[in-house]
Length: 289
Image (tube, rainbow, N blue to C red; front, side):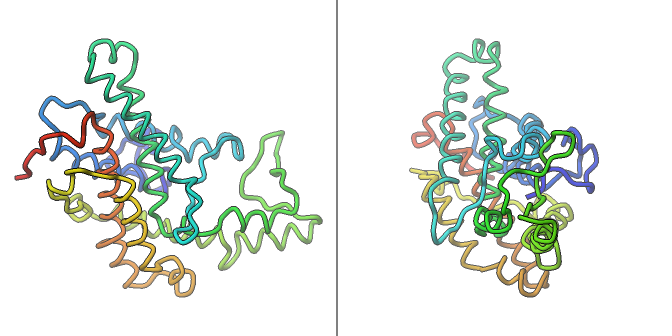
């Protein structure tokens, strides 16, 4: 999903009222989470979380150092290799640790910047969850790039690697490969078009339209791995990206994005964050009015 686009106000800081897809989903999830937090419980606020999106998030890392320790948030639901879940699990563990340290010794934790660490981990966890549930990420990206790049080295300009240029064994082959990647019905052009469409829907919708339904009992004995994969297979069963690649954006896909995809992602982010709260499985659930 997009975390930096020209649609945004204050895109550099990712803090405007109109925000990128990741930022708005994060804000919606934080609003939802607040319904279930104890009055004095600490969790980074929305502003602190979205600070680590955009240029400070995974998408920024991909632009700054393509191919170097960059997170790959793609998943094949029917052939899951567990890589994406490992990203989610790592960020969850780090967020749990930070939140526990703050609860155990608030003054010391704030002095040591643990609250900042918690905001970072919350943002990157949400980013991995969002990408993992995005239909355009349910595609064999690594296989496609491997097939199109005869030369596995990135094209460079003044020594800087440029991601997204497919290098072939010859100029002709490079041109063909880039057309298959960026041209009409190319892998990346379709990927961008799908995510851009979702971004428009997210930007246009009010907060109430993208808030998920979560009952207090949904948080009792919460197993987030189970919940994440339930959401993944619910979204994947709609086959949205295959239909988009065939027919482009249709009214049906737009309705599914608004009514199913977006609320389901916000729900998953909320549950992922809640599962990281200290003693989340033993918490007294706050009633939602």
